[in-house]
Image (cartoon, rainbow, N blue to C red; front, top):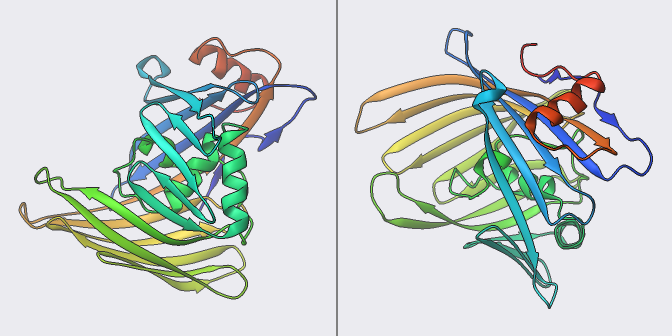
Length: 287
């Protein structure tokens, strides 16, 4: 279910800047492409104090840019990215804004090092995407896709999540909990939550298939999710229903295989980042 956007990994020696690219596709109920969203993430030398995310549909000239600024506290247990504080609470909890995730010990240690030392926002995006934050995070565009070209190690797991969700109908904020279940191998088999459930339906040599259901805020959502076991990228077919409008919408989404290019040259802007990707043989958009 994943499309390759080009070479998956290019690593020249001593090259501090990283340019990552992903394209996300949306199809209607009849399989017709309705939208494609391009995203480029530019990260500076390690440990970088900033990164830039470019997002656009259509032509790159319409791109919106989001600067991500990092600041680590003196105790080295917290990093602030723009206005969001990410605090590591031993032995295994990480608080992102108001949300709290309980992780396995190896995942906690890994994520703390990646964020405090490497400023690796792609690893933060993976946690938020797997954590089903439902569009309440300050990093929604970043976490909308998978940036890593391969799955996380199976010992890196979310165990529990304590999440906050702002109503789309009012200013009320709901709090809900989720518990994650795994097979002895480390494979995710299900999630149970106050308003959200996910169940493993089937497994083949290439994919894991999940069923997700959510009823919340006068709306319901049912989706089938396919996760590519080789790349970790997912695709989904979603049906949502809004009670107030009595409106049902079905669509399918999937993404290209993430591309990560390291380069000696500092990407000055989006066009420069596109040029660096093109020189590595990466096709941008429909070009």
